Length: 548
Image (cartoon, rainbow, N blue to C red; front, side, top):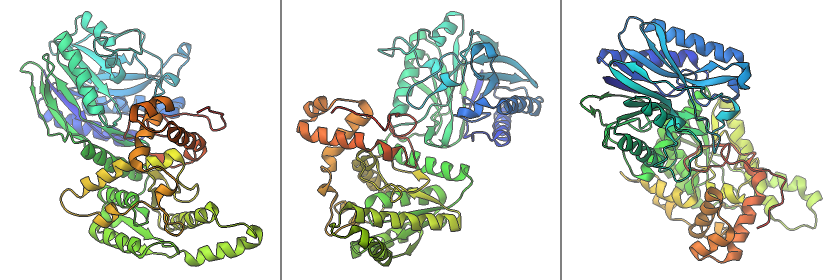
C-alpha cells in the first residue's frame, strides 16, 4: 500500500476549518495515488477539546463533519483514516469515545475507539472518554491493519520498565493477525520527546517485525505544542519516512518496498525548543483571534528573547515593544532595548514611569509614614508597567506577552498584577540558564539580541544597584535545584547529595517554590516545553502546609 501521513494543524472547535483542511490534504494524497491517508487523533474537532465534550451539540457537530468529509471525497478511491469523537452510551458513565473512523467511497467502513486513556501530566482523558470495548483488525488493500490511537501504542512491555495499563492494544491486534501498525496521535512536545517517541515505536516495530506508521498533530493549542514529526518505522526498527517538525506536512510511505519521504529534522535541543516556542506563540495569538502583541522591554535577556520569538511568530510589523524606565533603570537598558528593536524590525515606544511612581508614593505617604521603603515600592513600579501594557492591549487589540522565565515563576521572583500581567507566558517553562542558550541560538547567524543584553548581570532594576543574586542563588546553582524538585519531585536531601549543594540552601529554595503556588495559579498560561510545566500538568493546592 501507498499510505500518506497528513500532518495537519487543527483548531479546537473549528469544525469547518478542520474539515476543509482534511478534505484538502486528502485530495492532495489522492492526486499522488495514495491508497490511504492518515490524519491525527481528534483531527476533526481538535485536541484537547476538554469540557467541550460535555456538550451534546459538540458531539453532533463532529458527526456531521464526518459525513461532510465522506461526501466530499466520495469520488476518490483513497481511504481516509481520521480522528474524531463519537457519543458513548450512558451506561459507560462518559460522554464520548475517542475514535478513529475509516472512510471510503463516501461511507464510514470502520470505526475503532481508543483503549488506553491517559490520566497523567496534561492528560485527563478518563474524565471524558469511555475506553473501547473491543479491538479489531481491519483489512484494506490486501493489508491487515492494526488501527490504534496515540496512547494505545505507549504500553509495550519490552520498552517500558513500568507499564501504566494491564493491556497492550498493539500486541493484541498483532496477535489477531495484523501486519501493519497505524497510529494516529496528538502527542504533545517537550524537550527530548521526539527521541523517546522514535525509540518506542522502533522497539514495537523491531520486536514484532512489522512496519509502524504514526501521524502526529502539529501546532499549538493553549499551553500545549504539538511537534508533528510524523514517522514510519520499518520492521528492522529504522526510520523509513519522516515529516518535518513544527509545521504541516504530507509524506508518503510504501509498505511493500519499505520506502518513504524523509524530511530533514534539526536534533539540536535549543533549535527544537525555540521552534516550539515560535509555533506556540503564533498559534495562541492567532487561534485566539488576534494578530498583534505588545511586550514590555526592560533591556534584560528575558524580554529580549520573548521579543525575538514574537517577531518571528507574528511578523515584526505586528509586535510593539514598550520601554518603561523608572528612576532605577540604567541608561544602558533603555539603549539596549532600542538596539534590540532595531535589529528585530519591531516598533518601540518609551513611556517613563518616574512621574507615576512619584504620584503613587505621594498618595501612599500618609499611610506608609514611619516605614522604610521595601519590596512594596518595587512592586508598585512593576504594577505601573503592567497597567500601562494592559492599557495598550485594550486600546489597540494586542495581546500582552509576559516575559518571566521558569526560574522566576518557580520561586515567586515576580509580581502579581505587574510583570506577570499578560495573556501568554512565552518562556514560563524555560529556566534562566536555558534562556541564555536560546538567546545565543537566536544569534547563530548574526547578532540580533545585543551582546550587551546577554552579558550584563541579571537585574530587575527596581532599586539602586539591584542584582538577582541579592535575592536568589546564582542561576547556575538555582536551576539544577529547581529542575530536580519541580520536574522530578526529588527531595532536598537527594538534591543536595546529587549536586553537592548545601542542604540548607536547597531547603530555602524549596520553601520559595512552595510559598509561590498562589502566584503561579494566577499566572498567564505557560507554553509547555519540558516534561513538567507549570499549569494543567502540575496540580498542587495553595493552602497547604508542606514540611521541607
